[in-house]
Length: 187
Image: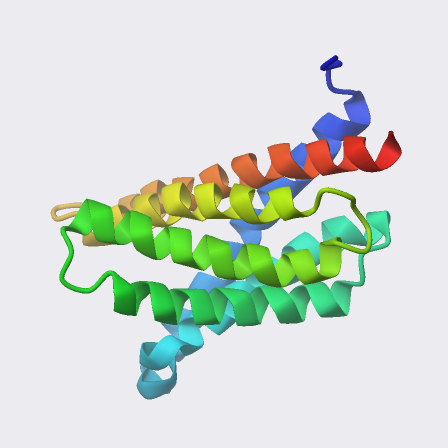
């Protein structure tokens, strides 16, 4: 039986979505700020590490209340996002934009999901579902982010606002999975 969500579950979901958006924004803006100084590092996947660290810190603050070790969460999220972005963009080269962005996002999601699963598995039964949720979340989210970055004729502010819908979508999809895992843990 699927029970309606509780106030605590809705609050957890909202916190998670906001954390994912804010963490991505902070990571992205840090990358933009250091890009002129460290082009080789950001160009070779370092930007994925920075964005992943931003997301990991923000999400880790939410997960602390569930006794998930924040330090490990930040580390695995940064490494997972960095590796996923590097591999995903390599695999997607030469593909049509929409397909390439979706594939790259799916690889990022698989990498982040697997890395985070290493931390979640001791706190939640059925944590393997977390990997699948991240694949779907970042395939959608990364597609939106990438299409907004490539859109012609948009002001920078508008492109960033539209691109911000990407981490919001990823946050919503993974928030649903997080609430489901929390329910399974409580049962």
